[in-house]
Length: 264
Image (cartoon, rainbow, N blue to C red):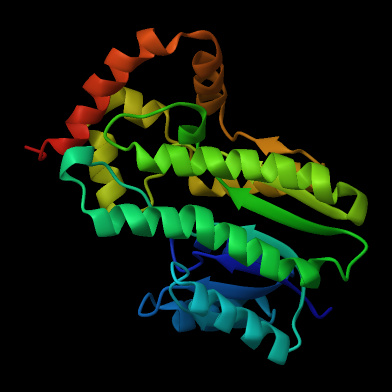
């Protein structure tokens, strides 16, 4: 089969976990990530161990010309793409009045503009198939404002809304759109240190990457629109629906301030 799955943010964390699981299932892959993140080594490893075709493209999706260059490469290489996983994203914790304005801009460029533009430009590839798929990676943060993160949850709320609207628009054309809402993920030393500051609560909210990927791929195959992996995340979702913001706000301020305090 010459069909490919295109995964952004594929060099580490959730994107890498998606790549490994899909390769084990026999899918050919196109991996996209920033330069200098060992993407060629990952592609070679997957080819060697899973016997699938793996192509890769290193670029920064924060810039529109880079996205257009990626699309030109896909067209020139004549890839047949039936599945797009928009996983690339960035966030972090910082008081807004101290936040670097360039970082704020990069979060918005990557999480909102990059995801939207790439989806639009990959769509003609997907429409060639009678059935194709888009999986957008949002976050549990999409369901509530979060102090000391501010821009990140707002950007993920965009992904949530964008995905549901796009799903309604494209379902008659054979493109199924789903949106994934993972919670905290200990996929890097930085994230692990941040979660340790939340103690037991942070550990309880953590869902292993493999379980997130397994749940996401299964529920996409079942036609699910909104995917929330892990029982703790499901509980968290309903808490945001039923507990007023005025009650949640002081708790979130107290919790997130811990992320700004250097670990002892």
